Length: 362
Ligand code: NAD
Image 1 (cartoon, rainbow, N blue to C red):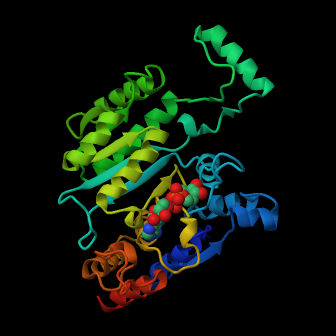
Image 2: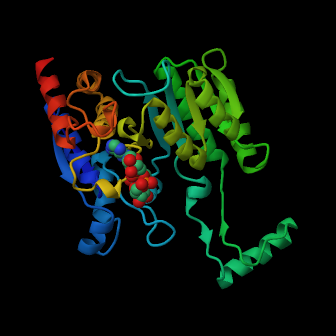
Image 3: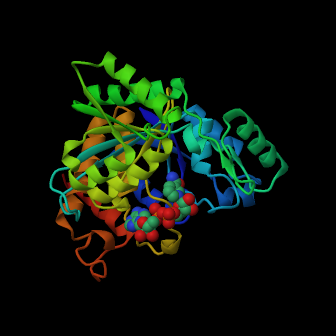
């Protein structure tokens, strides 16, 4: 049996880590026909748009995709391709496991966290009004009239939609994940003390959904700022966390830092009938083309993908191989060496070679 999988290599370091992951996935023996697609800056040059129609069509058809990071200009230019993909394909659940691997430097001894981030709404909905525009002034007038609140005339405005529908399905996803994966507890993270209507709604729905799992999975909630402090001080107390989009984004980087850094943190964007796998990290432009960065996050995203495809044995073998390479600490990139300037650090493709060699010898 063979699978057809869409692969979007991405840009910056994306191409290097994608190629490394693709080679490792192929080395598991699972037969994959790769359907390579281009998105981002490169796609503008070739197709006149950052997200060509054929990319979405390919993912809709194949149902499974893996992508490298894609650069998004800060404060100007096009809207994030990553966010567009998640929203266009309704990949509503972002799953980001953060666990310890031997050989990876971390301050913690006991940590196994899963961040479940809502992917389609909140301040990521892309509803923003630029400062100074006529429609922004009209919006300010309207909001002042409706809410009685004063807004400075020289403001830009962003809208934060939080719905019952999206909150319910993401919290259910977190509980179902907890049940399927023998996890004990789900923590809903919010700022409902201040954002009483939006985050308040998320929390209310989370409490309702938790009732459906009572007796099976423990539930609690935390305010997001307190959660950050708790995670740094005692991450071992937490298990699965479920969060609205923006807090989920921030906390998943925090959790990846606790577990040893962005270089080892995989991710998945999952919808009802499609899934897109990608590392948490971005395109790290300063390292582009240097064959320097760690491919582990992208390879581990491939592990999540194989597991999602039902290829549990291949997923376990690939995870074991990468864990062994990291534990041995010899053929690893600079970020996994005790001293980041260690001249014995290997490049992205050599670390992938070591994983493939392990896969073959195990
Ligand atoms: P980044 O994750 O690209 O890099 C931050 C730093 O983390 C790097 O300078 C590097 O020191 C380290 N790092 C990241 N990946 C690493 C790896 N594989 N191995 C070793 N070290 C690694 O974050 P950034 O600089 O904030 O973002 C750069 C660009 O990436 C931006 O345009 C941003 O929008 C984009 N981005 C894309 C995605 C995505 O495609 N899903 C996600 C995050 C950021």
